[in-house]
Length: 110
Image: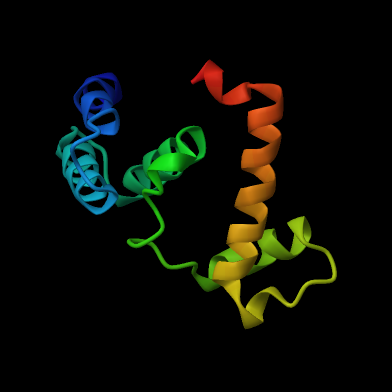
């Protein structure tokens, strides 16, 4: 179940001895082992963990910013040419979100 997966990945998230790339691979492996949990769940969980723990930088080296993100990024960055540099656009949005999170403490609810 998803709860069992969460219990297995929580220690990985907090293991300071592992680099982000190793954590990403290990967490992904644990998630897909969950009954009825596939690649879409891996993506959702990895993004959620990355948002809650931005200092881990889980997604930085393992996930490219696909064309499917362009519409959302353009809504978040009106007037920007997101298609020209999707990664820079995502980093800008992420920095703004992380700055807001740090100010209001919302990540502490995870």
